[in-house]
Image (cartoon, rainbow, N blue to C red; front, side):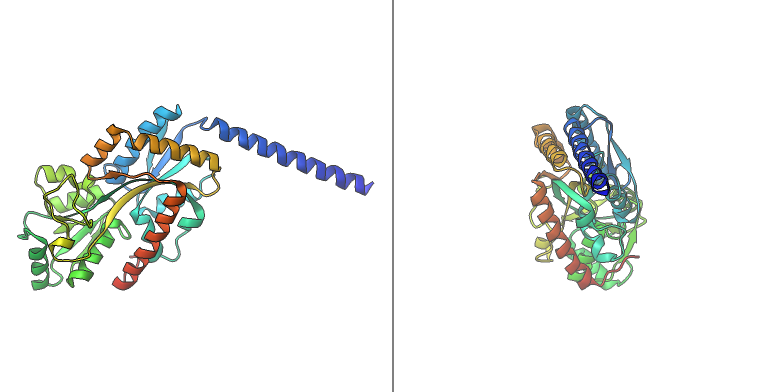
Length: 327
């Protein structure tokens, strides 16, 4: 009798597992059947927010479901990262991530999530330089002049960023390290707020993304001195790089990519990857990115995962060398 009961139980469990697989597989094939959220860890109007809304609109048109952007600001983006990492792995929560996500692990060993373990890569979306800007009251007209001013008045100048662990933060610390200057860091809740603070004269300088600074640059509320990438950007071809302006080898760029919770079915990830590649590489989207100082750059999930591993390793070296810690 016991053997019959055990056999029946095993049969039941096997059938249940198969039914669960079939239902889950069917849900994957029908995906999506409800709205999708793209979580952004930075304030509305900033570079990440702008990119997320551009992607959301096009994905919605292709998926036939609303794709809404949800801003979860704070802690350099880690609040949004954690929210998506702990979301159900069903493809209805996505993370528009930035380069700052690969800096945070080096600054805080106690993050409530593991970037590589708890999140799965979908695709890189775009890459572009930051731009070193100063308030018009700062007399520097070049990187060399800025460094000379900073060296002559140690501790007097300060720079703003989108938050501790953000791309702008690390760009500023690398600038300090390579130029051997003492400049204070003032974190804000987002790239737009930080750029506005520079335009208002609350901070002397900044390393915002070009999308965050573009409107202020156009009305000359802030003065650009150089871009942070190794090569010049097509949007500002006459603007030198920091490397060619005296800090040889300086190279920092911002980037945007899409992640989902680990465990999302591979077929859903593959579909999202295909759609992101489709919408990002249209002539209209490429042109929109170029206007914001970005280059469309999509990848396979596997190549994006390798890219993130490399970024984490590189940032860890810079953080250690600069002696940075989470504030």
